[in-house]
Image 1 (cartoon, rainbow, N blue to C red):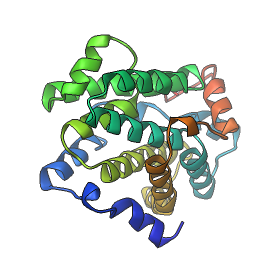
Image 2 (cartoon, rainbow, N blue to C red):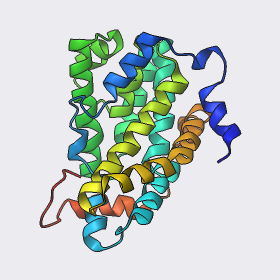
Image 3 (cartoon, one colour):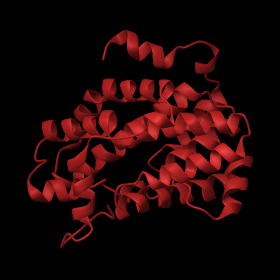
Image 4 (tube, helix red, strand yellow):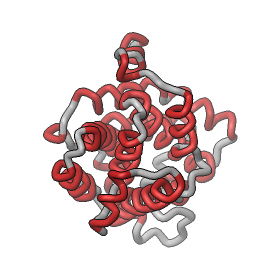
Length: 242
């Protein structure tokens, strides 16, 4: 990933601008302190660590990069951008379809729980504390609301530009996986931050894919990660819910 590609994501004209309130809200919503329970999920990493497949910071970096570029991260980015555009257009039919597709693309029961539980928590907290007309409507449907869909709806409702909102969402996903790795492998916090710096280009590349691809491009090639999520369901001792 080149510097030029990173700039494309962050500086594509007026749609990428940020105001102080928009930045503040992004920081609040995607902070580890926002109570969506993200710390409870490892995305199958716990099984990989237990099996010996992920043992070092280098292993962790490679695993998260694959998730971002070829797996759930890429799909989340596409779903996030599609949701944002539908919410901006107030197209409730498309929004409901995108939410259903996002839920259907979860490849295992725990991954389904991971995205829908965080989405439900984000929606409930954001509606109460910040307000979101789109989340109010979708919440009344009482149907699964995956996490990227919920965050994108709130970003659109609050006038936060798509490009920085998507990049911030993906950074938060990557940071949460790094945090899980720091606890599981275990790694020191400095090593964890080094991993996070090495993910910068992967996160930018994934954000760019989300901005330029549509729902027909959904798919993944991270078979081991999907299998890890399935095997985690029956793992004997577990710290995480996925």
